[in-house]
Image 1: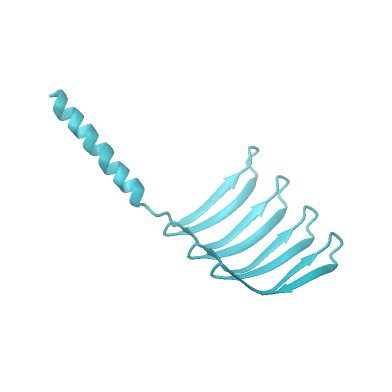
Image 2: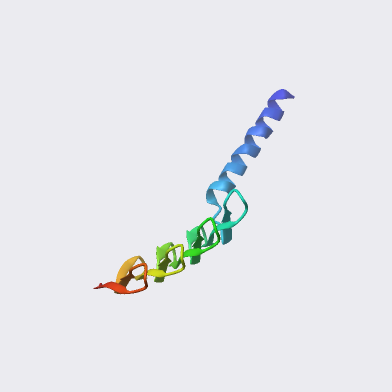
Length: 116
């Protein structure tokens, strides 16, 4: 009887391990700071990064927003400082740098442009 129970337990563990290994999450994950404020919102499709990702500092100010497609950076990515000033605007196409990347100083003055 003990052998049958042990075999059933082993079989159940094996099946659950196989399910977990093959599972690919689709949906949104929200990561929070210890005080429950939102730190990051991430979207996944079939286990890969896909969709808008947003990152906030610990005071709730949005400091980064960008998109992924099929696990690769795609589209416009923006980064702000803690005062809400846009500091960087960068572009990707399926993980490859494209377009004109821009950076601004803390006063909002355009400091640099680089073409890819």
